[in-house]
Length: 143
Image (cartoon, rainbow, N blue to C red; front, side):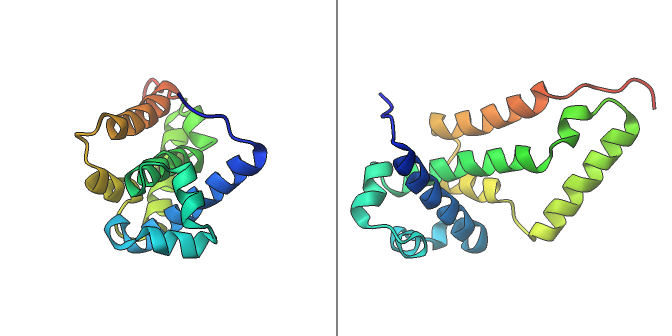
């Protein structure tokens, strides 16, 4: 059963996830410890385990969800309007530029390798991201 958080609790959890995501992007999930995350987000050990009872794997799963949403958000509003070839090309160019600027490595790929796709929760994160991405697309006719 998922517990309901207060607005302050939701903000704290989100701060932890965003801080962990930044560290994971910069250093890779294998090179980030819970102590690193606590220091970067100014949280106590008890807070960390309050929001992520299963520890690092639970937190990395939340980071994966956060990063998947970032992928979708970064592609808007273009992703929602792929109705012509010029729109497709503009979307493609934006995506390529975004990920070139981000540098080598994809945060989602790094998280996948750390969490492992054998875990159903990990597969659900990536499946939901793909489904949302594909569900919004309309395909142009002609060229």
